[in-house]
Structures are given as structure tokens and as C-alpha cells.
Image (tube, rainbow, N blue to C red):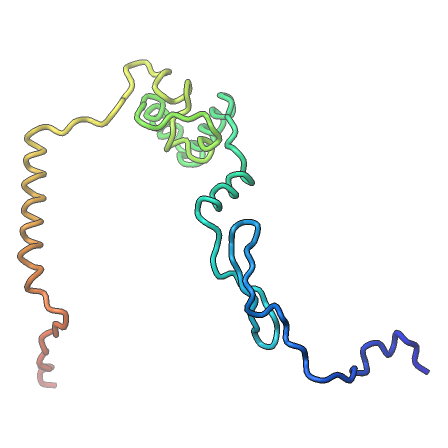
Length: 187
């Protein structure tokens, strides 16, 4: 004798044809601005996104979830910079040279946010490595090119452009390599 739970789902219910979903073909707009449509795939009714949300809405949504970057304290910035240079320079001398170069260079964007933690080399932290702690005047920008060096560079670039202009009309799309003769020699 079977209990009701042993027989659950064993017998198929007698039914006719499956009723097709009335949702198929309908379009629905989601709260984030994306648009989707109900479709039949392998006998199942599924919802597929046909158009995503607008880039502005996406950016707003992501930034609201991520939140604003928080400010870093000078102590946290100092720790981040030390950790960064300790990982990249095993020699104390090389490390001191790199840190000195970073401390006396004021040619990077100054920030106080946590993005400094990710890459202290790409940013300067106000009061730490923005050139304010440097014994001599900090480097503000790269050295200007001398007029003679600039003239040489311009001439070289012009020569390259002229060479490229001469070459381009001669190129053909289907260029065959020359056939080689099989001259193996006598054995």
C-alpha cells in the first residue's frame, strides 16, 4: 500500500495540449530603463533583454551603489606609498632613489582620495609627495626640447611621412611572393 507522498507526481495528469503563454511577444520596461521581450525558447517562455539601460542611467546607478571615494588621511597615504615602493624595489638604495624622485616631482595630478592607495606612482598626495617636502625646487614639468633637437625631430617625422606616401600607392592587395627555385644541389 502506497502512502500519498510515495505516489506524488508518479501519475501524469491527463491533459490536452499545453496552453501557449499569453506573455510571448509582449515587451516590458524594467525599473532601470532596460527593455525586454518574452520569447519561446525550446518550449519554454523566457524573458530576454533586447535593449539595455542608457549609459547615463547606468553610470548613475553604478555610482550610487559604489558610493563616493572617501578621503585618505596623510598617515594612510604614507603607508600606501611605503607599501608600493617596498613591493617594487628590493634594494634599499633603489627604493630611496625612487621615493626621492617621487617626492620631488610635482608633475602629477594631486588627489586626497583613496585612488592614491591603488597607484601612488600615478598621483601626488597633498603634503606628502607633491613637491612640498623637497629640499630643492620640485620638478613641475619635463624639460623643454631645444630648438636644434626639435628641428631634427620635425625633419625625421617629415621624412617618414614622405616615405609612407610614396609606398602606399604601390601596394596591391594580392601580392604574391616570388617563386623559389628548388636548387638542392647534387647528393
